[in-house]
Amino acid sequence: MGKDKLKRFAEIDTFSNVLQLDAGKPFKGRWNTGFFKNNNPVVLELACGKGEYTVNLATMFPEKNFIGIDYKGNRIWRGAKTALEDGVNNVGFLRIQIETLLDYFGEGEIDEIWITFPDPQPQLSREKKRLTSSRFLDMYKPLLKPGGFVNLKTDNDGLHAYTAEKIEELKLPLHAKTEDLYHSEFADEVLCIKTYYEKKYLKVNKNINYLKFSF
Image (cartoon, rainbow, N blue to C red; front, side):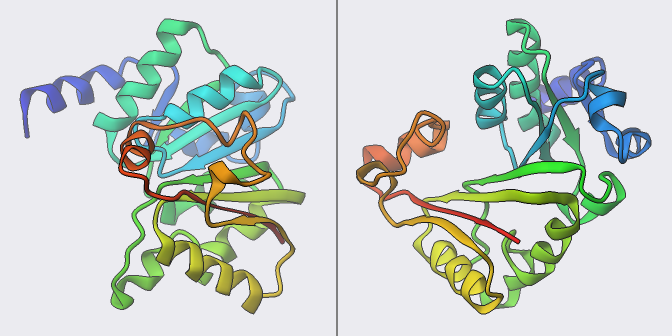
């Protein structure tokens, strides 16, 4: 492991806005009052990477609480550090495996979920690893409040198509769907937040897909 990664792993241990593994379990069912010290809605970004979307959303919506979730601490470091430096207090980061979500959040605790540019896991043998597979959808359903949304933003056409098929198969309410976000009616201020990797995709004229659905 490189020195920079080791330094970042050590540094996030000191960050007040980062919880790692079991440290997040005591907040199950009470993230708003226990961790954020308010009664505001809680929004998750799964596989948040460097946390760019999480921090931008938190800046845009100070009346909500945002939690970025990823297992790679050296990535979380960037978003957590930016939030601390900029005084964005309604954002936190949780370093866990997404497969363990139900150990950390209570039923009906989450208002909205964002999945932005996840690993598409294109191999058929890895379908269960896709963050919109039945396995994960079954996990999200009890966590979301009635009327809560799941948003998927991806450059991967295959993952977009797979998720659309899954929504249809499960007869889930579909609220938005486009294969070309920036030439669609859905390109608002929130969806126009661009991560580092998304900017790279757009430079080579890659289309960006978007889906919004609920249970």
